[in-house]
Length: 215
Picture (cartoon, rainbow, N blue to C red):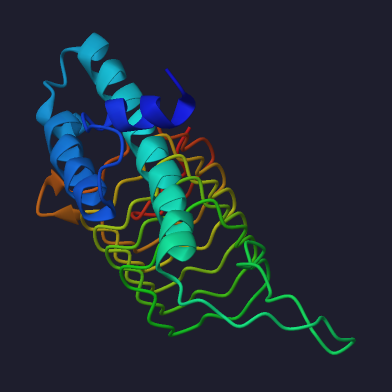
């Protein structure tokens, strides 16, 4: 079985499934395997659910990339052959290094920023609701007052990130590295109910919403 076939199998799809089918299968499996659906007193199943989520996220990410390339190959209109000239330039590749960039107040809702390097970027007040940020590097980033409602931050690097007064309701930070992050005043609860997924997250030294430093 090829690596590509394995990713389809992870999402319980037949090889060659469409991007729409990939996205739907991803949503269905995340719903089934989300740690919130597993009893808290069953650490074995909690660990298994987290491993499943990692595999599901990786499969979706790889198949989205593959489907995007396939559509470019098969659906791009033919272009007339031109003799190369000195002025011909290669289109820039998708920029994965966004470190230090200014995205303050930007609308990044529903974007796929997985795997990007956004360390020390300014995302203060940005709308990141429903944004896919699997394995994103947000080390030292300014996310103060950002809207991270239902954002997928699985395995994100958020060390020393500024999350003061950020909206984290519904966000998934499973396996994220939050060491030294500042969450003062961040929204993570509704009443006494915690509404942020923090399964396996590293919170050592993080300043929690109530100002207490997590040990």
